[in-house]
Image (cartoon, rainbow, N blue to C red):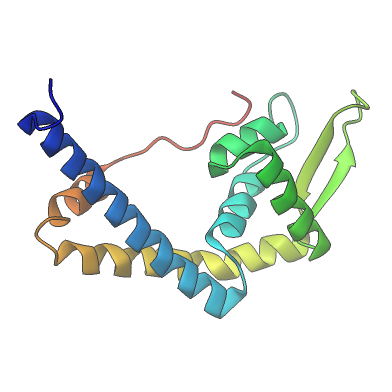
Amino acid sequence: MTATDPALTALAQGWCALSLLHGRIEAHIERALQARHDLSVREYSLLDVLSRQHDGDGGHLQMKQVADAVVLSQSATTRLVTRLEDRGLLERYLCPTDRRGIYTNVTEAGLKLLAEARPTNDAALREALDEAAKDPELAPLVRVVESLKAPAIVLGT
């Protein structure tokens, strides 16, 4: 295939459309979360992922699992955890069975903020999708997103 191959051109255009949709949605949610809750999309995502942990086998996530879930590097995730810990929204403690392991839990204040922010996140997502659906190039992608039944994040995998 050459660089001017129509299949590659269509593929690149499809990727650009998907990237554009993602960017618009994330920017819309970011503005809403920042304005109403002083949270970034990444902070919200981290609180959401960590709030789904549970005690018992596989219940607590390792930092790599958290990083994968919020689509950040491990170092960026550690910095994000530190910022939220400084705000009193997360707490870290040593694993009781492996002193090298560190767990991160959402505090009561973090759970309260997450509960307050969830409707904002959901409404902003809906608004962004509705706006994108008006664009003929993005409308098919919006329909696909709306039809997805993504599995819940499985902890401990």
